[in-house]
Image 1: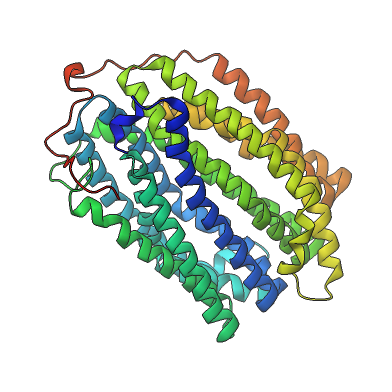
Image 2: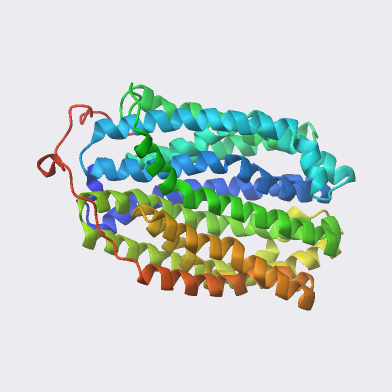
Length: 464
């Protein structure tokens, strides 16, 4: 499909065409993530699993600024395409992708050089600290290509190329699994091998996803020129919610890991890591569904199709609620069957702790979808500060307050259940914020060309 079909395809068909490839692609990414955790936990050990959970928030912090540019620019580009301004959309794409590559290079260098002191500040020591340092340093070396990989996924979806995005995600996930088998199982290498497998796979995805833009097969293409400072500030503002959400969520994860180390040592960190691996299967699928329809919402917003925009959002919320209920039931009644894959034989203490953590964590799915979908909707219609408020409350402030209250009362159980308690307050806050917002679409530029083919697009090209 091309981007103009966002405004013309019947919503049920649009929903399937946008979300199904995105959910399948992200589902494979989640399967890779789970498989990666299985290889790390079962073949390397508990300390390696804890190390991965310590490092992941740091990697998210490193990529936060690049994610801000990618998210803000993709929203702006969708609106520009909805208004018929393909030239400005291509300039925004070119400038922002270059900025992402530059920023991620600087952040990756910092992560490589400062890995050991950062891990030391988190309170890790011994084998867990050694694993964490090597994992962070390998990822830091590949950080520019990894950030480009995630960014171009946004731009492909903006152009309506959800099937190509799905194909790239599937191939990269399968390659990652094959490299894990080769390096960890066959060659019996350490945690650094898991980082190499992930980094190489994403680097291939980055190179692959650049091809259609270079060959000028999409509405967006590399072009000369710059964008105004005002335009860039608007893009950064649009993406600021994603930036602060990533920073806040990662900061909270770091704080939680420090608390877990003090309450239960590396076993507690490993337990929450297992829960998050299992949780990733459903949470990533739900997140991909929200992201897949965000360009359509932004396009309709830019085109002034307010009623259609709201109907698409209603479909997103109904589907998110349904999938979240399925996810909760799966974690409550079926998640325990996955635990032995992550845990070495005979480690009953880690199994029991992980099972209890999973069942208490599962309750969060009753409400977490509300904050997630409403925050994405505010970003899609260029209400970044409202999106930021919703997400900061849901991902940082309420969880932190719940930790302060619940951990002294219930110790580790307070950690396991806090996402549900915080999610209730986050959902209520999100509903209040959205109900107070009045959505006013921008004026539509050149309405006579809104749905007409442009000379920059080859409409006879073979669909990817």
